[in-house]
Length: 114
Length: 110
Image 1: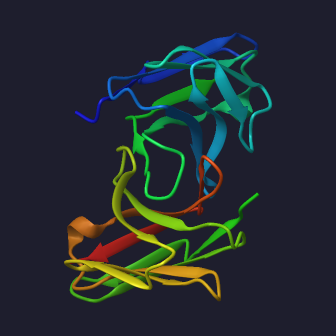
Image 2: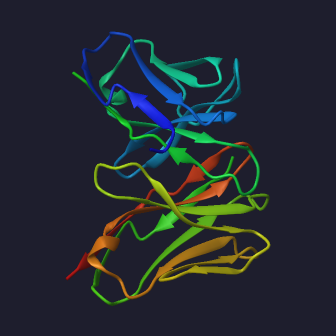
């Protein structure tokens, strides 16, 4: 496969509960990203990581936190889930941060907050 | 940061016709522009890309053109087939990350 897996693939959770999504890669790529995909908005960046313990915010980071304690894993946590966070979440990896380095996406996690 | 706009949001063509999707970007420092195809329920996948020092790139029925002066780039699909039906996203490379357009849903009618 693409060397990147997301878990879980589907999750239903209740408003106010914390949720953690996991992205795991076997490519040893430096860069990892979390995007959310919503109709009419395309893919919007939540957070990204440019190395172990190095992370930065994206355009829609409120309500989300991330952690990267080792190269292969990037965790996204919804601290207290809200209905507006119902979405499809994609993780992506990239070998580099400059020109010519594209993304490889995971299969996505469909999260429903009820 | 970068702002990428994509048009149209939906596009319906007859099989065998051509399809064109257009994107504009705001940051003149952006220098790498990939296009992704996303089939229903699947992950986005890279189909073609172009760097800022190139005006056009072709790969079989797919081509991308870039006008750096006007800050716009386009995806051209010729001889469309039903399997081309998908959502297409353009993107522009910013610092360490990509900014994506809002997507174009292409429907190819047999």
